[in-house]
Image: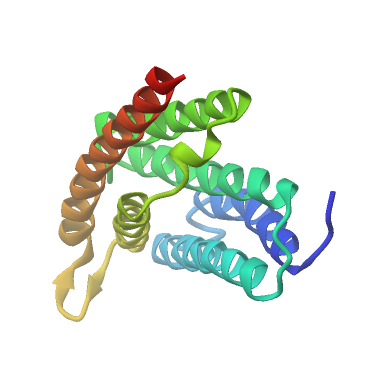
Length: 188
């Protein structure tokens, strides 16, 4: 395992997950509900920033590694899945939308692993569509966690709309990756 700044940031993201989840399991006497929302949102946004930062630093410092390439998407999927499950439990997100997003992540992870085994991993590399999907997803989750007004606009409404858009982008990007994979497999 390479120990470098990008990988440490990825480990930090994984270590933030229990902090994030614990905020919602503390009693209301221990931590007021609006503080739970603010802390969880802050931790989630910090995790999202480290996701961007670790990739940037890996490229900038030439510290990309096979271990980092493996661990980074695992950390992302764990944080997003934890957030979506909590949002469903809190009644802030639809279970079907969470299932679509989490199911897509599992499907594409399995597809990437399979394509790597047949020597075609580059055919399912992250695309711009996947990055756009992730941006919508992260913004939606942050707004739904915060559950308040931002610039006079109800964050719950905007977050819900963005989450539905993220789910549509999720299905679109999954279809895109599956079609790419099938084309590569037919060539073999």
